[in-house]
Image 1 (cartoon, rainbow, N blue to C red):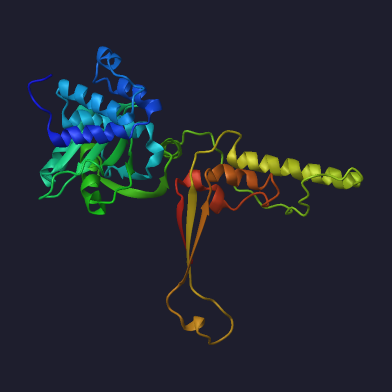
Image 2: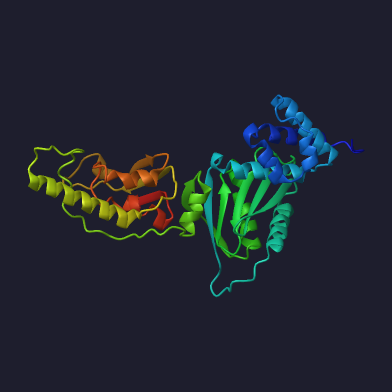
Length: 344
């Protein structure tokens, strides 16, 4: 046993972090963490009751004199494995007019980011973990001027170096967003930051959209003759001219769909939301609505476990005409799934 007892709050943080790791992933996550040695892991019975397993692992952490930052790193790794459990927002930064692209130093970015937060807020803990593609995962446990950081409701930021994009897990503490934005902007040597109208649980899909990491071609199609026949099967006694017409139309739909969506998997989004604001217009004089100065408002939300793939399948299934409305097909190209539609 070590001479120094681990702080009770750190011990509890370890216990709760390890407890939420599924048993099927326990060894993989612990090895990725690389804090406990192979020999130490071999002494642990991973087939015992989970509570007992957690207690044994916490004792090993105590032997190694684990710190709060070690526990935070374990929590980052768990979150990387379960990133789909969070909802991610996208922030876009920009440089001022005439500003050159500076050489980027990741260690300098981390130091600057942490100093800005610590200067503004005494009670905050910031942890970093480098990831693939020059990315860094940042874990922020917010406190207040009078309360210690809450380690159980952290915010996460994923920043890709030398890019203007950062992805943040939606936080309940909206009041800290300006400070977070300021730290990101200054540390990455940008001038300003804006929140994009883009959100999803699927971090990799958001990254693919903003970095244009898919070969999607968007074209404006002039709508041709709408589908008249929606039969899913062909009657063997049907007129050959009708069969030919159906075949030709099916080929056109497939061609238009492929030109718009491509023939590869779509980025994964769960919804698209459209807010419509319009003034009431009528040729008739009078009426309650005609005197209304406030615009009429309407909200339409499309939801699906995989919205873009669902939209891609509509026309080939005969559910919608091809091509679909640009308001639906422009989502990846515009990098938006929140739209506001107003009168011109």
